[in-house]
Length: 54
Image (cartoon, rainbow, N blue to C red; front, side, top):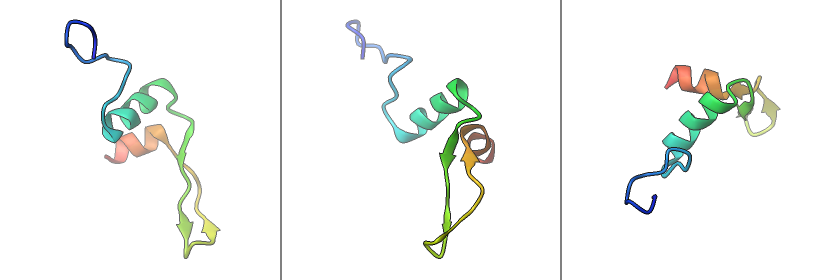
């Protein structure tokens, strides 16, 4: 929060806000790589792809 009590636009307060911010700032960066059966990696999911699927 700012001194006036308003939320800062650059400091997310939830995971959802953080992921949305990352999608805006670095859309092509890898957000997640899922593991099939805990071993085999799937293609990474970018922040833009994650945001689009939300």
